[in-house]
Length: 331
Ligand SMILES: [Zn+2]
Image (cartoon, protein in one colour):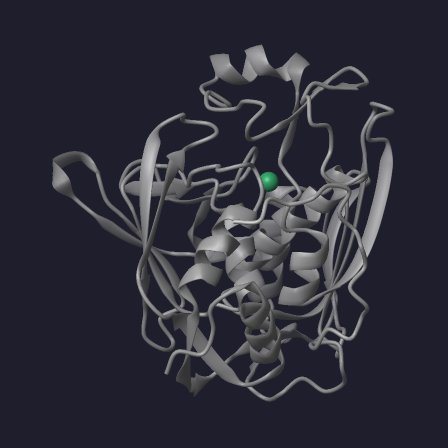
């Protein structure tokens, strides 16, 4: 049964699905091509519908000797997470920079998908989650005959590094996120944002926020083999207190919004949507994944639940705020 296509219907479906009880997958296969922001390698992704309880898995092709490797998008498959989030390992096959795509899957309410990829890195597209969401909206979803599962936080878990921290706290009314960053440049400075996450609120508040980087770091990163594909087409570039992109920012506080987008993607490596409150201060990919490791290391800190979430937080009752400072391209 095909139950969604087009942005408006997809939005309704995704929100309904998060509040409701059935798993979903894509209605049809879909394809997308681009280049990796770090590797600069061209890559094609084919999204294949997958059966209930399959979860999100990557099928990494293009390995030496024609090998392929199936890699689940789960926290315990993460091998590196300094500049981006990587699953698998370089010896037997990996996929890097999965976070913006994983966030798009959350925003589309997709539980089950096989992501075939012929290179080492998910294409960066425009540096945000929006191009992936557009693909899923175009194809639409099907509801499956299996209850959606959630991971419900039962007691606080926390990881710290100096004054930086990430934590997950019980929060019965859905998935809340409070993220704060503090950068030396006055252009960013200290920014904090809290959001009750649903597919709808992700689309309203976060989906267009792009990755960002500092010009002063570029030479060092490139010498280390990173940021080889970074450009003003896929990254907000900061030179001192100046934004180098001629179009400027997409949101006044695009930086904190992108950090939240990253966290949504990383936290989806729990394998299920979260019912709880995620908070972080100056966190990043590594701490986002670390807090999941801590959570799943303590069997008393969580439970996997199927029932409908109580209260209204999993549906999106907030007014549609005019958060965007630009007009997104209609495509
Ligand atoms: Zn990012």
